[in-house]
Image 1 (cartoon, one colour):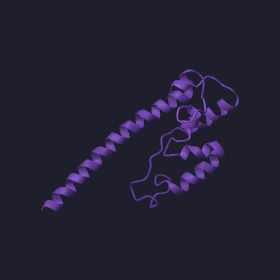
Image 2 (tube, helix red, strand yellow):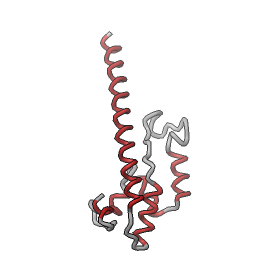
Image 3 (cartoon, rainbow, N blue to C red):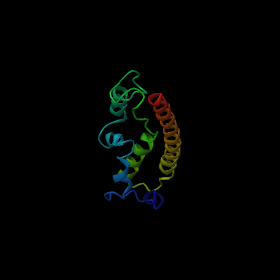
Image 4 (cartoon, helix red, strand yellow):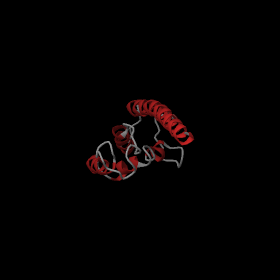
Length: 125
């Protein structure tokens, strides 16, 4: 975030926004560094349960829910290439995604805890 706030995307390993950006969404943002949005959309359509219901590639109901950051990542790459320095929109998108994912994590943890408690009760009976 500091790199964005300073207007310097940077590519330093493990600290630069460009180096960290590809790691978002469990590494799926890497595709935007090399391929078009259309190619990435086809990949998501094939691999994500939310876009391909019944796909048990990962396990039903246990797949990834991607943060809505692809537009920000593509914009970050374009601005870095053109030496742009205003990353206000990208920073806002990443912060909003972070907030949403924190909420999702809390909801998922609560649901999993409830399911484990129910299973423990069944096993104890």
